[in-house]
Image 1 (cartoon, rainbow, N blue to C red):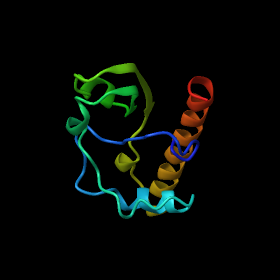
Image 2: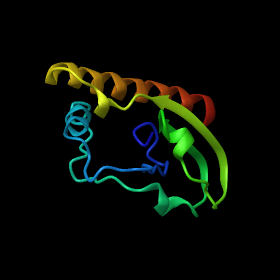
Image 3: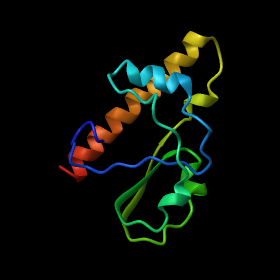
Length: 118
């Protein structure tokens, strides 16, 4: 969403974050000009008392496992995607899954942005 509007404050965190960002995520995002190589996963627990206009869960199981926010949350919704890290097959087949999910996330959030924020 930050790529749609640089004035937005966007945070990403997981309910059970990995130690590092998946290498294929870094690769497919770099293909779009976004360098995540210096980033690291964050735990949602660090944001539970913060105030947000939107809290959006994206992983299929995050909707059920996301903890309760004690800060003010104006809107909470779920836009679900399969976890590409669970994909199986050859390296190219798995990369194709990562690219598909990347593109679906971009398209869904682009639509959400234009329908709800802009």
